View 1 (tube, rainbow, N blue to C red):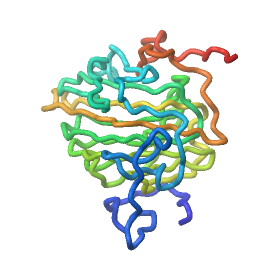
View 2: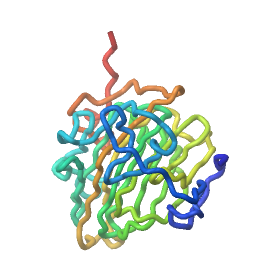
View 3: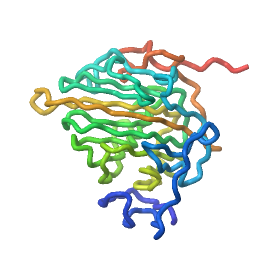
View 4: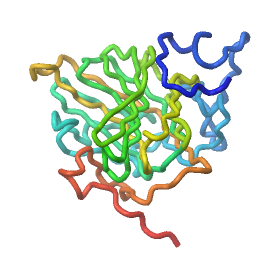
Length: 296
């Protein structure tokens, strides 16, 4: 079907015939299983993907966490958390049975990590689920400016879950200065494994859940101006009044994939393998990405 050219809200559960892509009467074909030659296929946790449905082919980069946290994933911290509240610590990140997990406690001890190097324009897809918990703990998957120049560098929050029951997912595209944003939301059980994807081109930003498009915009004048890298964060927004929420939460990633497009522009900045990252570049300038070494 033709791509929608306006931002929109989807008020129905994905998976039925009311969603934005056509539904075949005999159901989708079985998803292929991932192999070394076909890492873009689905798997037991996320059997249906945008890559498989839309024919994206093999990703340019892939992480499956089979051997722990790869060196191109960089934990934040230790540092103060989002909006200088709580604490982000690498100790909140663990890998077990091929799944990377960020845990968070009710007092705001949590974690985040970023994937380098980035690019301007491209596709990203990740198999993710989030444990229910307090509203104060927000799970987000973001494209963040490699140059650490937010808000001028923009931000694409392509999976953002505000509510503790994890039943609604939003997309927010930031631009500035000053910081402004626009986007939409979809009713979806983010506590279940889902293949979330985003496609960013010079003409549009489109998001997918298990291969179903649920949001698209062509407001390209407000798109990020430079390369972005993917991050996964479990952020703490303490309740009004300052008291801690009750209970903790966790966010899990089985795999992540990145595709370059013909129009993609690779980042000229990156963190060295294993270097710590930061969500507070003004406080920790030594953790900001540096120029990539010149190639041969």
